[in-house]
Image 1: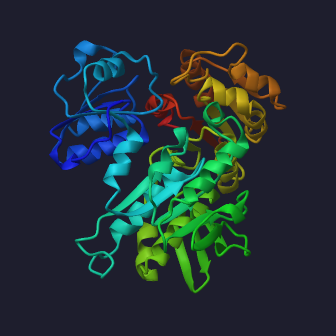
Image 2: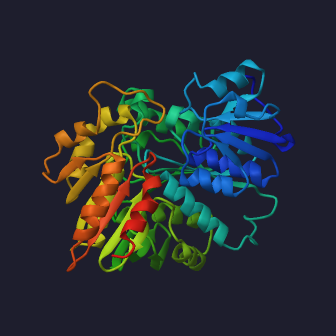
Image 3: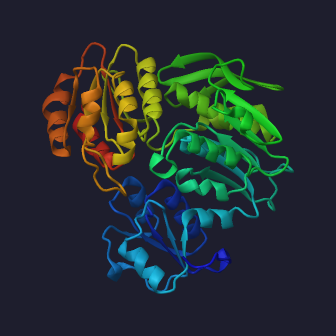
Length: 452
């Protein structure tokens, strides 16, 4: 890799290898909005890549040196891209500036006030919530002056890239074992988050989920804990009421209280997520009524407890959940909101290594659903591992109502079985979940079920 670079404002053209990821696509949009020509490669088309193409960004899906631009100022790649990738090799061997996504984030955020959201799950939703809350309030205060550049950053723990950031406010949602192909042990994962807390600037604050392991080792001048309902936390919800997939609740804080907050998004875990976002907004001095109005206007996050169909007979939810604890929150959230409805989940495991490491956890939480369909593992950056497959999870489950289906088999099952047997009395909940390409199946499933 070439030496670190400077002068983002002087870039004319940037190329992204792995442009379709959540973090990469956000940076691609940043450059595109700044007038820089942007293009990129990704393995498969997704909803995100289609949105990028719709905004004028050229994306191709074939690993082919003949298809890449040859006069770019900067090449950005994600650590998920293998080192033998042909396009990455070409740019490195021909003297281009080639950097990781985290290096670009580091440069972008060097001179800004940074709100960084980290955690093994929940960070995308909270990042989006924080950005929405801040963009929805009046910027005419002393804090939100035109001279102040504020960055809301999803701080990715993969490859320890979040250790290049310097937060003014840091949120830590969870430190569960994940990415063990990188870290090796759960303790090493926890240590990385402790090191991340040390990156907070003097005078900054860490906002951590109540009950995190090794909380006392998290370093900051100010520490606030948040929780769904645990009154021992500094910030928590109380008086929660459910109303047709939405919630109303009060938020208790050390020196403040918000009454009758309304969240139009499903899942009790999303109340906890918005509590963390509210803690950020309140710590910045944003008025209660403006916070409440922004929360009520929040319309959710793509693929985070996203309602695809919602009527009396059928609720179809799509979610990015790919870790056992995310699946647990997703299934429990759906079953709590729609107590009398049968709950069926279609889950696509993501990565052979994650499946191998967390198979027991996946089996346990999937048993919470009434019916389970597993798709084959989405490999992403990995080669197959002997003995590791979706059947490995099914074999560990206690439920009898489980199976593994290929995509074609699933399409036939939806059409010939599920669509014809939805319970007429109470209705049903259908969930699609996973971080691979299962999102490409959402629209076809929706079209098959839209007339129910």
